[in-house]
Image 1: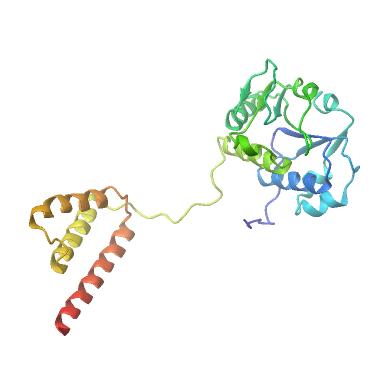
Image 2 (image 1 turned 180 degrees about the horizontal axis):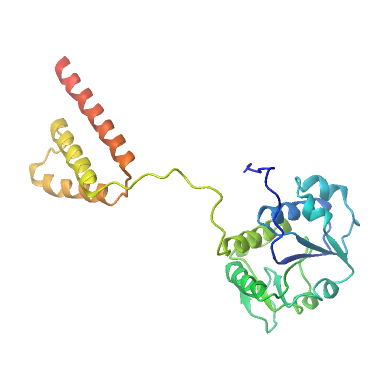
Length: 258
């Protein structure tokens, strides 16, 4: 989905940190940075990246998410990466025998919004590509966040998991409307919709659609119910009436040719 407007500056609003524990591939770090930038997250913390830092592969796959890549902080342990945070969410698809609440990403995003509004630091902890987080890392969390994914294939790429969390974070914003809306069109009035249904019924009568007089009443009622329940706007009603008129005209011309 292309739509970057380079005239816009990145807004450094208060937002959760994204903590990656021992990521193996620079490409995955770059894709995480891109996902974060898409939804206004900028605080990337990396614990012991396998291939070192900085990473040319991360930069190459970040797709101009320079603000995240250039600001990334490197830590030697997950404990150090979350030391300044008040609330930490550990993301995992595996069940844990631990007394930690388990919530979904939407609930986690709502809680993160509430905590940040109080001035508290919040972070989302993500594990390794091959086997995720270990129990000691999960124990650092206030809550576990898991996604409603298919149990038979529960493995997510790190960037995919970050994208879901980042999306829910953005969606939970009280001032986060969609960037653009479709064209406004006034809703059709009851009179306009009724005229449409009458027009259609008249055209169907003329075409011989109602072959059974006994069923005509119930069929007309069904047609009117469908039309009135469709939620048409005024332009759609005009378009449909034009289409009905055109089809009825073709029918009349066909009859004249016989």
